[in-house]
Amino acid sequence: MTLPAVDPGALSTPSLRRRLACFVYEGVLLFGVVMVPGLIYAVLTRQTHALKGTQGLQWSVFLVVGAYFIVCWSRSGQSLAMQTWRIRLVDQAGQRVTALRAAARYLLAWLWFAPALVTLKFTGLHGSGATAFVALTAGVLGYAALTWLHPDRQYWHDAVCRTRLVNWQPPPRSP
Image 1 (cartoon, helix red, strand yellow):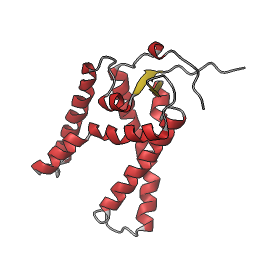
Image 2 (cartoon, helix red, strand yellow):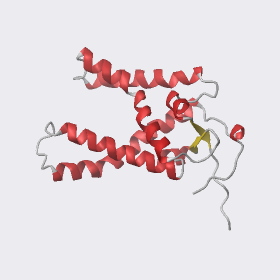
Image 3 (cartoon, rainbow, N blue to C red):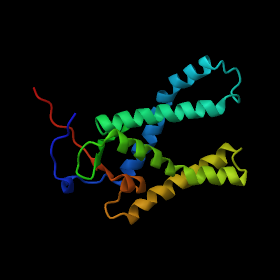
Image 4 (cartoon, rainbow, N blue to C red):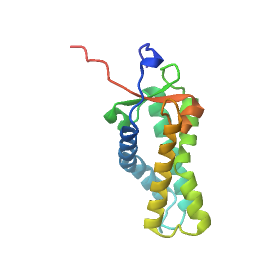
């Protein structure tokens, strides 16, 4: 699918509030994306206890979520949540991103969570759900706040991958 030719300067950046709302909605939708692969993993590995085989499950979920985002971003530039919020991922020229660029963006997007997860791991506070929630929320909001330092208000991983999140209005349907 080719995107229509567009002046990259005409593409506006969605507000941080809209992007964070899309981020939260994406998290809700990902429950459905990981449910079936989680069940398949449990059946194939005969996982009878929730605490056994968790690393394998985590890696399989990481790969499934990665495949979901890479396919969505490289085909249409939008995940399901991005379609709802009318946000699209494009390269610096306003065109569709390649699968390689989408994969790099997916890997770098884990920087949203990495500082909080490392902090929880090395402080030994990872046992409490409330503590983990507060740490992850603070990390996500801190990372999102970094957009105020970017001239186009893009996320750090988008700047590195030379991608942009833009407002998107779908073309009118033909009668």
